[in-house]
Image (cartoon, rainbow, N blue to C red; front, top):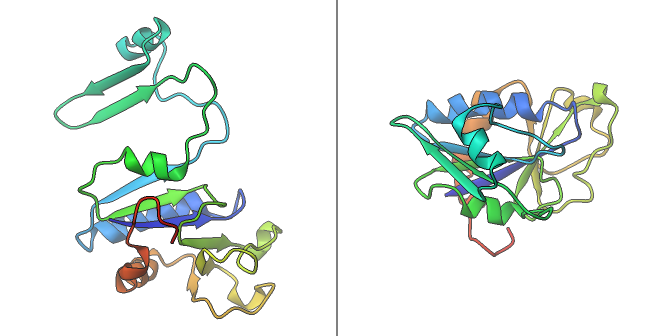
Length: 177
């Protein structure tokens, strides 16, 4: 399994890039999973549905499955901040790529998503785990870099680059990249 993170500030285009990268990798015969960090309270269930009622009744975990889909919901009795490695361990092991969005301080190899127009600082000068920069304005990068600079709007080129450099992204649980 290969794992790559996408780091950048809110509004930089991480979600849009990951959304476009998934079909680009799938078109190359790759099975893709995503790990996404949520900053706020969120819910994937709907009030009144069976699974919601089970969680409201106090179930620690609820698994719902059909012939097409499986979902696991786990309620933490105390706030818990799982590491990206703990979340990756929850995934099916028959996947080719895991795209990680939002764990910008993780010890995973990451692509920084940076837009000059967003007005946010860059991270690549201070983060050794950033292996490439995806941007829509390479001429406006705040500092020169020897890292690959990729077109933020070309998910096919990014997918090709990831596959060509797949050896850099092989995941070894518990070992920093």
